[in-house]
Image (cartoon, rainbow, N blue to C red):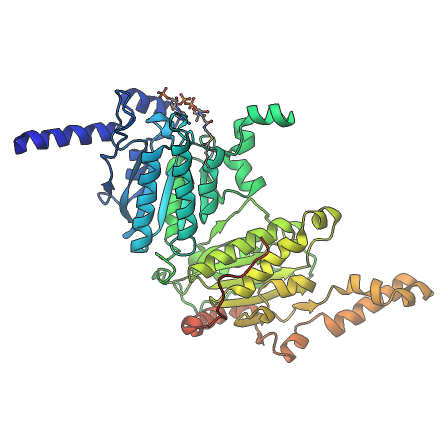
Length: 513
Ligand code: HXC
């Protein structure tokens, strides 16, 4: 064959790969309100940076006359905000994006490239699941991807973007990654669909109600972010990547934000009411604290009684964990513990300092919490903070009681710098509860029990509800003026840049999963 003819043949093959499942199926994809795999890649990456691999991969053993070059996934690398990432995008126009051996091998290969080069991997999912025609070969493909997800965990950031169906065992790959994004109305995740559920449990539900974006960001917590359309979703993935490093040996990217670290939080006390049981939105504090008020909240709609997310101080990315007095008084319950523990684990894996803002009445009492395992789930949070070796800076804003005081990045879990505001109450419990236990007899024997109760509460508050006992013992490094909180944290971050900790040799800990 002449070189011209070879080139012509190559062009034809590439053209076939570009067309995926063909013009009709591309049209059908658009009619479903979805972009194609290639359109998504183009929108996601910096212009002109996509390098495709395995566009010519195909299933030669299973040729039924309609061979799809590239099969049902597009893989390769490109740049996001000028930084290289690896990615794959499932192509729904080929066998519904289903995963057979070729697709499984392609995804595993691009994950290997990401691990070898130490760059994040982003998966755009849109698939009918295991390719039914391929039987166990399809299951093997999934198994290998799950294995790679686990190998890559804590080495490179892994982000899953669900842009169509993701059903059956296929859901476990996203679940093994660090962050899951979903698109409202066009993406769904579930292990078994509504029909199977109806036949097994008799429950009636719809695909959207069961596995739509809103369900997963608010009820199950499986997804971290929901976007109203694909463009917004991909923009948010780009934004997330701007906070995180390429791999576990790298530092998170510095940015010149132009926001001075000496900026005082002059109106901070108008945001946080002095009375410890009054509500406020802790995001108003976070937004004042971080550079240019830019805060990317993670898991916004799941366990809103704790706020987690990324921001920058002095241009340096930080992970923020903050009790949220606006919901359930900011109490720690099962979901809040799981959410914060997972976030702390991510930050620790990828060298992102953790800034903790504490205003917590305690762990949530209740039979359902106990039966649901608050003991084990709360222990996850303790474990995550104790095991984290990144810089840990904690500020107690208003109150910190009981086990929650210990769990929320206390000095006892090896936090590096711990501050408290002057009004902070740090004790086993609030005086209003404490007197009912330790002064029960005096109160019931008093001529006027309610007056006596109030007197005892006031006495307890004066004696124990302040930060100075903790400061005297060194559990709090300093009691600071709230307006200086940003500067104090910035200075601590600067000092902790060279933090180095050695841990006892072990295979791995046994965290209470
Ligand atoms: C092969 C599949 C497929 C699959 C869809 N297609 N799913 N081909 N294997 N799993 C094909 C269809 O035949 C069709 O081909 C094209 O993809 C588009 O599918 P439609 O049904 O026309 O699209 P739509 O109406 O949008 O419905 C999408 C869908 C539905 C909801 C995903 O196709 C569906 O329910 N598919 C089966 C899902 C499923 O049960 N998968 C197995 C899950 S178990 P043509 O040629 O017409 O374009 C699993 C186990 C994993 O995944 C285990 C891992 C450990």
